[in-house]
Length: 233
Ligand code: GRF
Image 1 (cartoon, rainbow, N blue to C red):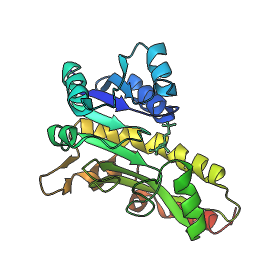
Image 2 (image 1 turned 30 degrees about the vertical axis):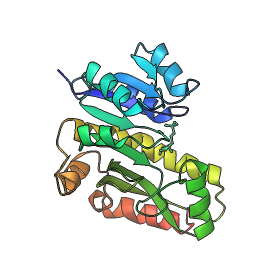
Image 3 (image 1 turned 180 degrees about the vertical axis):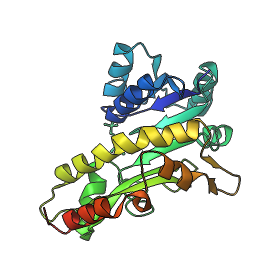
Image 4 (image 1 turned 90 degrees about the vertical axis):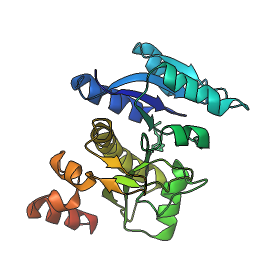
């Protein structure tokens, strides 16, 4: 039986789509068994319904933590995958699923993360800071926003004429490539986190897996990326 994933999403669900396509082609790695959202109008729910994935809207009231845990247990979920989920995961769920909840963030954490840093706010802050490099981070979820142990990161150049929208699109493309592979590495337990928050297997999994680490690229590829980041074409 492949590991069973629950995807939690608040928005349009393009990462859900990327995950779905990836695991549809690799059914033995993992299966998306449940899609949950805090928003009834989320595109992610429509996508789930169209693809026969069990889906539900979360009740964010007082019983939220218990309700979410029950839904996850009922669907026999092995790994919780946040994909554009804007709410803090309740601490009861974090405790019950420690080391089994991951998130994708559209910047290189710990920079440009934390409360209020989501969507366009992240890319606006990156541009306002004049940062030359941003990127994508996949991390385990703990009780704090965007601070859990890092599973994988991938840099993305920032260009002088970028707008929050052009930058978001460049980052999103990398999210769609990186996230399914990082999810696979955690779902199949090639990457794990111990009680002290140390991640094991991260670098090896990144290197072995579609070269998602800067050090694993050959010099020519790296030089091309670097030149491009300096405005050469
Ligand atoms: C992504 O940029 C993700 O990194 C962030 O929220 C956005 C979700 O986009 N956490 P989508 O709903 O997957 O299209």
